[in-house]
Length: 514
Image 1 (spheres, one colour):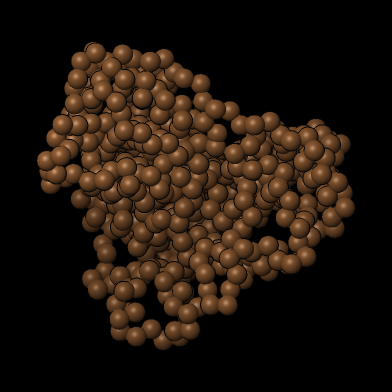
Image 2 (cartoon, rainbow, N blue to C red; image 1 turned 45 degrees about the vertical axis):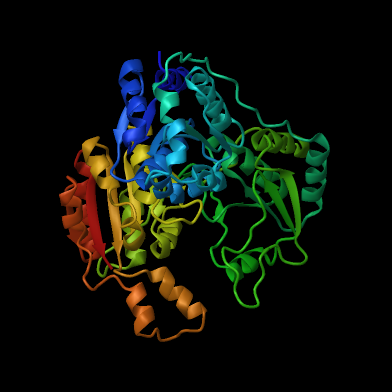
């Protein structure tokens, strides 16, 4: 057994079932090991940002890491944006980077780079692998690190001679580090604070956004008259009819301050206090207003579900879920197509059990508001703010859950970053329906220009923010990658297009002209 085979077998025996890859010369022994060992599904992508983004979506829905296989430093650099998003989300992912043979490093070959410096900012765990006999253990330790709470990207740099060298030994799965138990004193303090607060709000972290966590949070809210909220971009949230409704922290800082202005207790449960996405002239970084006490019940690194359950018990809450709203999706829109009617159409037609990946940016809020009581669904958002997550994340989610329809509600500008994911969707026959919000501009940048006091953008600002010269033809782009599609220019046409898309097996794209 060579080192590559030992690494792949260690990962397979540890529960890795999928490998997303765009490999090159230095990964050929690792690629061959996938055949020699078996048991790991190979999923190719045309760009490394699709590789890492698909592994992100897979981890969100499968609850376990996939393997990403990348080519040297430049290949890894192509995937960094979506690794940034995964790091912000605390998502498990094992990344193998094939590097030059150890004895070739001094030659400073054209693709040589400082891989460690590239990988360190987005990695929760980072190691350069040892010789072939050690590679199996290195891989097993990378997997354990990725699975350890709160989860993260584990990056293993594999010199080519470590992969092809003899003497490899597979290593059985190693136990991950578990989350610390809740602090009893902190639970008691939180219970006292809730009893004393007049207008409390619970900010729920990603560990609490499944049905069990939301049910427990609803019990606490019922006992304390607290509001429930999640981060601006939640990792994975169960939404829709029958689920407790939660608010979302707004994007712009002044909106956050307005939302929290009446709150006298902000209880952080596996979440961090909100901060501004950007610094604005005269603005603040931290967005907890004066008069609002921020109290941490559990950090993201702690066992937040256990802490919340202990808090519910301390408050003496009922064990059953308080009443929740029945299904009430919006009516089907007619007339002009705009962000509101687009969001209403998707919310009205999305099937029960759908996974909705939302990277709609300026079109996202109307969908969020319209889908609160839509059919039960899972909502995935742009966690780290690095755009280009939607198409690959939808791809990975579909591989993790082949029995569930996936909808990618996608802004056109950010979709162009990783549109190559459509090819992987076609190749793997994935049930992903992409709805492109085609306003033919970087609309968010137009908003930011206005916030900066530029009421009338000049020719340079216009040139950098519009996408209409020439206009992107998403239907043709999709067809070129093997995905059928159509264009809709009214709300009625969009409803008809969505019905056809949802009834068509495999991937499908609808370009909604706004």
